Length: 156
Ligand code: 5GP
Ligand code: ZN
Image (spheres, helix red, strand yellow):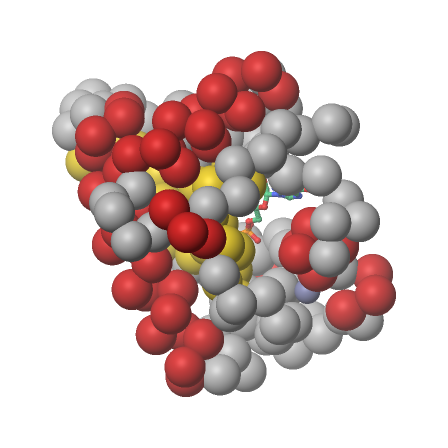
């Protein structure tokens, strides 16, 4: 469970620094929310602390609290925009648990009844669709969140 990586080589740190593109939904000082580039379902969202940590074991408590608090607001936005039957929340720690990006993150995955359970998507999301969903989720965040909105379009 100790798959530490150099933050300079971390794709999520590059996204935070805007050195790599992402369809951003929300950000504030501590937290960034963006669309998963291989969505399991439409609206599959990732929440990360902006400062690098590997997983649940080395994440700082105040950053975990921020991610969880934002997950509730993003879940409400997902409900408004996607209207799923359910929302899966999961978070993997260590390659043995299926973690593939070693920067702590929480997944929010809208789910419809009867769909097979999956943790990872197999196909790259359509960039236009991801951008559209990111904008819709950003717009659906409750008042108070709007000051920190940064809905942008992926250029990848
Ligand atoms: P894990 O398996 O570590 O819990 O999940 C990592 C997630 O990050 C996967 O669902 C994968 O699709 C997503 N991902 C990997 N690289 C990128 C990227 O460059 N941009 C975005 N937006 N998502 C990524
Ligand atoms: Zn990182």
